[in-house]
Length: 467
Image (cartoon, rainbow, N blue to C red; front, side, top):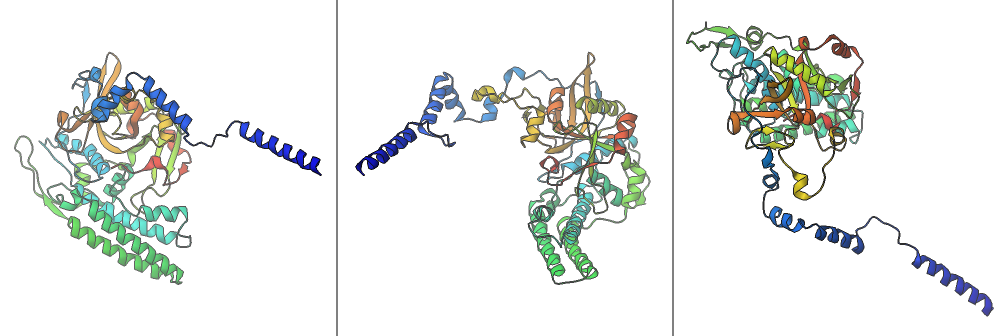
């Protein structure tokens, strides 16, 4: 009996000894040993203390500015589209609308020998918001049979309306409602400061969306639900009219050109004004994207990502960056500006108005490497399109493309009166979307439009609207 107890005791002691002598399992926690190694690495870097003293008391961006890069970009461009004046979207996310209208503005100025001209952004914004509200309500009606935690229903309630957008919204809103000059329907306080108005409309739409779902649960028929939606939409129209003013359906207008010649006073509708002063077939424009995380040479479509219920989903050709730049140069050489969108916050020197991959040396400041390429930045949500501008110039010297010029919509203050200079290398890394007239696109690329589009979900982070 005593012998058996002794054997068991010895066996238990052996097992316990093996347990405590085995290497500790890595649980992923930061233990004292790991922390000491980090401290040691930091203290072994002879420059780390100096960096700590400098960075902890100063602005990281300012300290990262690469002074060796200053002065390397001049203000001259071999090929530039003449534009007049810089617009200002103020405290809004309407860059997509300003960019789209700026593409056409240069044409109106040049065709009519004007000193300056601008379209009413408020006019098109009014109808954009009304149409988006209708799109949301229709989306709710079409998903009333799905639970609240369904992915599409969640997405709808998270994004009932916003002031951001993209090119297909420009085309569809103009195509349906036309354009008017800015002096016919000027900006309002709330068109230039959209935050609170948008918040109130979102609140109302979410309430209305829940109301429509309750009607479905109660067994109301389609006509009853549709009639209720029309009343809800009338409330949104009222909120917009009170906030922005009510857009004109007809107006009288004339202009004076640079030579002092006064045009005939005429009566226009917004659509007749568009036909007379712009007259471009908006279906002739093709959107390109450079997204190396997806296959090139394919047509993609973003499901339910549009501005109007009967409008077009966001559709684009994913293409190699050099091919896109060929189309861009052809358009500029022919005097036609383009809708351009990018990740504007990356390597942007606001004081000099330059977009250059060498503007800031963050890695040198922190003593670490930042080595992701464009594909990896997209896949990890590090980069995506954030802002739209008009592409208006290219500088070609010694057979090479050196830089590009963007007409921004942040007002005319700052370096070069509101224009941004972009190096060709920056174009490669942070350009995402470009809209080009099909006449500048080769036949083989246009054939891609005949493909069946690869459908992507509206909640894909690459397809957030530009603001």
